[in-house]
Length: 103
Image (cartoon, rainbow, N blue to C red; front, side, top):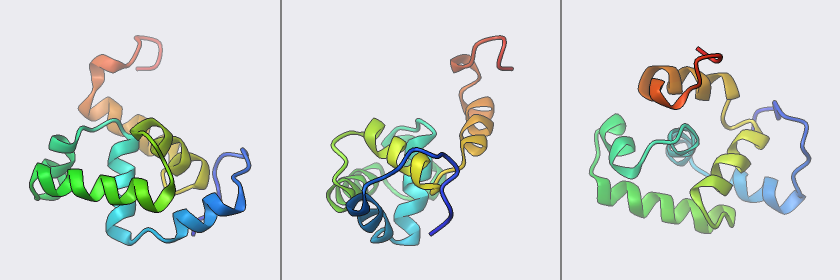
């Protein structure tokens, strides 16, 4: 697993749960952390929305996350997701989400 890019400590059980994720599940985590809906993740990955919804539920079970926000934070703190990648994705897919100062 990548070295954390944020210095907020995660409990050992959180690390162990994140390590259980497959490569495919980590990709889904990255899209979720970028704020994409299940439908948008499905479009990016070339699958159907129902499949992504099921996969997100499996990721919740594996990580212990109770929400997409909590999953995104775990992914960011663990280094699975690079904050610069999130910002670049927002600029590309969600320019209306960003304040003028960030652009």
